[in-house]
Image (cartoon, helix red, strand yellow):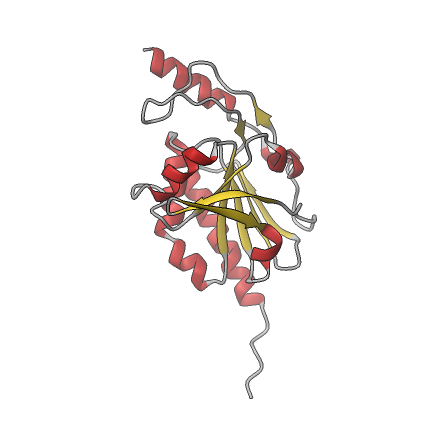
Length: 198
């Protein structure tokens, strides 16, 4: 019963309206932070990653929570489709790097395919005009481990190589959020002029 109550509190804490988030046409705030991929840590730079093409920056409340598990799993399942559209995916949360190392390698969720970055103080989320909720006393993740950090609202930004936001996606279910992001990066790919052939 206590776990159910804590889960309800967590759900209430992370249901935000995304209307205040940065919108299409805004400049995406640059950031560099520690991240994990397949259990290994490294320094992630948005600016450097944008040199390779569009970046899907998705903010989520916490690793190992129901909706975030679904979203990470869906992104991992469709990872090759994002790559085919020229996009890189990075998840951002207030999780510690230690939690993200596990999450990034977990075969049921990120499956070694997704970069997940730590925004422990919520600075990056706030730069994107997202609401950041306080930690919920007694909240536990789906493994029964206590969650000791705050929560950013679930919102995805598609950022073009020139550093502009092409889409802000919020207020959807975790799986629908992924689908909309994929649709947008495919639209961006279709809009690119064909490469000049010799």
